[in-house]
Image (cartoon, rainbow, N blue to C red):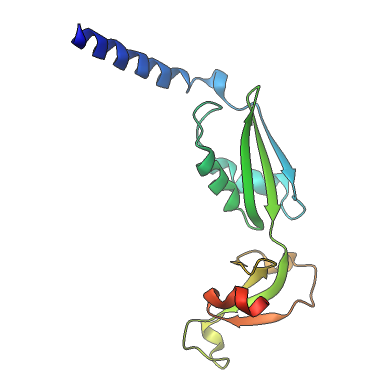
Length: 154
């Protein structure tokens, strides 16, 4: 009796895992909301969609969030499943507050070769994005190790 119960439980578990992967449970639409001024639909489709895995029932929302947050200019993404078969994505984009020249510890201003250009957002977080997308050319330029960005911005 115990062996039969284990076999039935295993079969039921396998059937459920198979069923949630059926095409009928695929997302029908992905609705993007929030701050999307710097990311087009094409940019989000090219950068985030290939990294999304799973269906309405099986997708890991933390992995989905990471896929959207890997897109340039996206600071934070919040994902929710919405019936029927939709994924709602709310985005918050970085707001550039300064240009950033990341230097390794011990590098001085004369060591330009060791500097890497990036941006600092209004939260003091260094992020990579296309510098040509920055509309405000009057942003200050800060430099130093990345761990000092937040304190330098204040």
